[in-house]
Length: 168
Image (cartoon, rainbow, N blue to C red):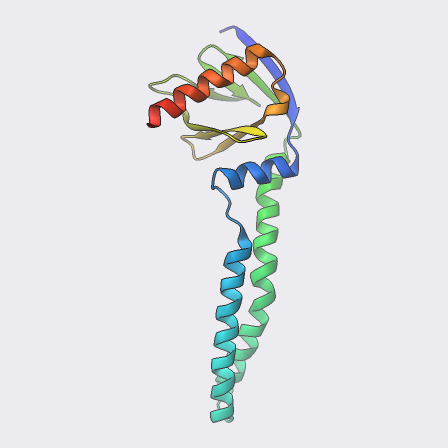
C-alpha cells in the first residue's frame, strides 16, 4: 500500500510521563506512598507500645525495625519504577511514523486502523499528544508537535473521531 505521509520525532521524558498519567496507565505514587507510610507508622507505634508492655518479646523489636526500614522504600521504589517505565518508551530514540490507508506503522509495528477489525481500542488526544491504546495492551504516543502537515492532522482527526464515536 502507498504511504500517505511519514513523520520522524523523538519523545521527551515529560511528554511520555504526562501521556501515561493522562490516560490512567500510570498513577501518581505520592498519595499511595503517603497512605502506606501512615500505615507503617501506625504499625510501628503499635509494636512500640507492645515493647513497652512486654520488653522481653524480641519479635516486637524486629517488627519495629522492619516497619521503620520499609518507610524509605515506600518512596524510593515507586519513583524508580515510574522512571524505568517512562525510559522504556524513550529507548528507541527517534521514532518513524508512517501513515498508510488501512494502517499506521510506528517503528516497524503495524497498527491496523480499520473500524471493524483494527488494533486500536481507543485514541485519546491530550494537550500535547495523541495516545493510541492498542489491543495488545500497549500504548503508542505521538506528540502533536510532530504532526506538521494539514494532511497528517486531518488523518489523526479522522482516526480520533472514528474511535471515540465507536465507544459512545
